[in-house]
Length: 390
Image 1: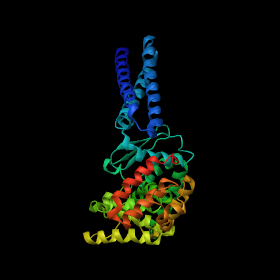
Image 2: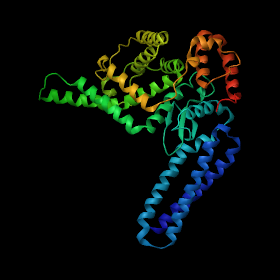
Image 3: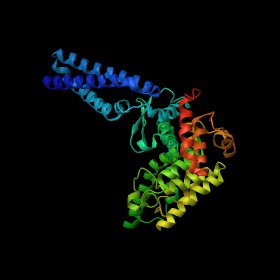
């Protein structure tokens, strides 16, 4: 057993050393916004190396009694090295100067909340997602084609919502449980029966309530997206999903069970409700009309098979509102989202925040699509050169 553990730890030590060399070589090419993450990565490499060396020293003691402990330590080290490879090394090795746009926005987002200011972050390629961990850096994923544009950057605010949920997880889970309890009450039949059909219906109700644990999480993140980024988030979210497959509008009943995300059309319905309640009636109507037109063209009829009812809406509103209060994200300011204020924003784009730029981008795109490309190029250059933003 001692020889087996020695082989594994020696191999892990070599693997970590090679990774560290590659990370150090890549350091000279990484953007300045990624340097905090790079520093964390190198420090973590040192910890992994120290663990492997300690395991080897413990093996050299020749004590059979501690072999189970060394095995456990080696297993943990192996998992950490593999996780390190899977999630954390790539953002440094793939980094390039053009990452600065996303990284600058992400760094600013993290700076807006006291609980996330010191959490390193990085960018990786992939569909929109995040890997929020309180003891590790947060990795944000974005399609390469979207990384050098403004229109889809607001979707990062939704992903930041996952990190805020993790920061407040016990409190968030309690609020979600309260929502689930209310949904349970809505679903309870008026009369009680004790037969196979009643048992089947009870099981189905239980599945619906369980599914809402994940759905509430996602709707909270949508709420974070709008509260922080305003209409830019709503338009970005809608544009990204609205002409994808039919399953963005309708999913079979059995596929809804334990599904991580609500049907996107339902998310749009609830997002539009929030947009309207925040005073953006025209934007809310534009969202609803766009999705309704596409659904009508495809011949899709809205049906959530009991997983959602308008009867749930007041409880959902209250739950998400309470979760937003608990998370306390930075809310957009009027000058960052007001159509009138954005029209007055000069071409030099003296920014108060990236939120202002992202809302300006969407207004420009919607009002002057032909002139948008040239405007966007200048706007991105202005953002990257702006020394007032973190």
